[in-house]
Image 1 (cartoon, rainbow, N blue to C red):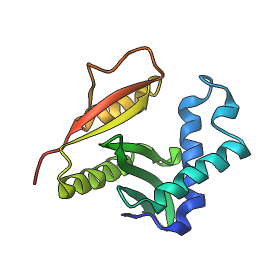
Image 2: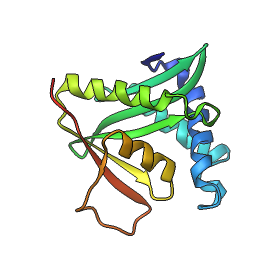
Image 3: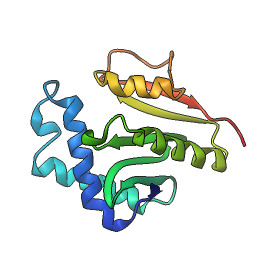
Image 4: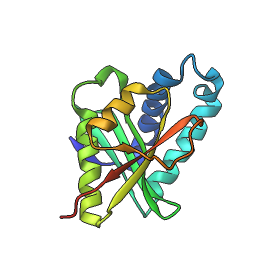
Length: 158
C-alpha cells in the first residue's frame, strides 16, 4: 500500500534511507559519509523538514505494517524534483519502487507538472536502470564528471 507519510514514520524513514544508501555507497565513499550516529541524525533532520514541507510530498510504501519504501519530491530552484526514492533492500525487485514511482507520477499529473528532475549517483547502476525503465532520460546539457547524473522525466498531462 502506498500512502502519505506521517510524522510518526520519521524514524523508520531515516533508518530505511540509511540502509538503502549503504548499498550503493559502500566501498565508494568513506563510511562516515553515509552511516553512523551523526549521519543518521542529519538524515533524520532532512526527512523531518520534508515531512513538514508544503510544496511536494512524501509517500511511504507499507506492507503488513512494515515501512518498505519511501519517496519524496518538491520544487528545487523552481523545478519539481524527485529528491528521494528508496526501497528497503530486503524488499527489492517486488514492485515497491515502481508503485512509489507511479504514485509520484500521479501526483505530478494531478498538479500539472510537465517535467521532473532527479540526480542519481553515478555508480548506482541499479537505480539508473530502474529510472530508464520508467521513462527518465539523461540531461545532455548537464555537466559531466560529477558524482551524480541528472535525469529528466516528461510527465504527460491529464
